[in-house]
Length: 321
Image (cartoon, rainbow, N blue to C red; front, side):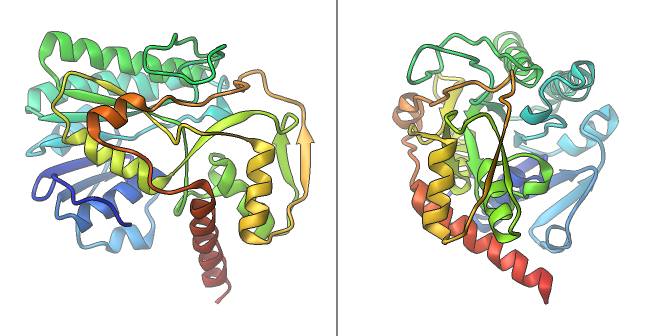
């Protein structure tokens, strides 16, 4: 991926959630820029990930206090990308979400203070923490009224990190990311509209969509998300939270048509009843991160769709061989 040179070269970076979509793209970039990468995995790891000589893998649970204490030893920057829940499973088990995500994040903050971590970067959700709003664009100061347990959990984690920064000096930056897409996002994991559309097209399956396709979202290519993560890790200014998105809204129906144009795939759509936890419109105002971090997205939706399709097609062809 082509990005500005990282100022994390030579620094010890711990990536939590490293085998996931965002985490693995981040690890690959950090390695390419000369960072010393320690990565945590828990349930699954691919052969490609395991073989990467630039990554020191640690196997254990994010919720295990002793394991995390050891993982933090000698580290400078921590990227917290772990989430055991997802927006699609928004209210199935809120108590489990609290125990598996919010409580371990609070524990991570405690351990990071004890370990003398320089900077903790936390990936929150720009798609769920704001809830339903009358504003066309959502800024970091917009009201937060999440309508799903997933969003509530992300918001609670944000607040705990703010408290640790205020009272215990933990330097943390929160990134509220919109809807990322790109290589290594797997449709079978239940996240990622664009990966789902492309997968259905390649496999000649009907695409099931909640609602009538008029829900509007802000889609951002994974390389731009990674560059925001790296920029945030090197930030030393007064802000503690940034929206990360394209700043451009596109409806589900518009994205489906854009995929058709970019790939030539025939995509049949099966419309399902809408979900109660789906916010009708969500577009992020990215003025603050552009001004504070000199960051802006580089990949257009059209170009990102072509890149994502090329990766998915290569994976499908490789599985046939």
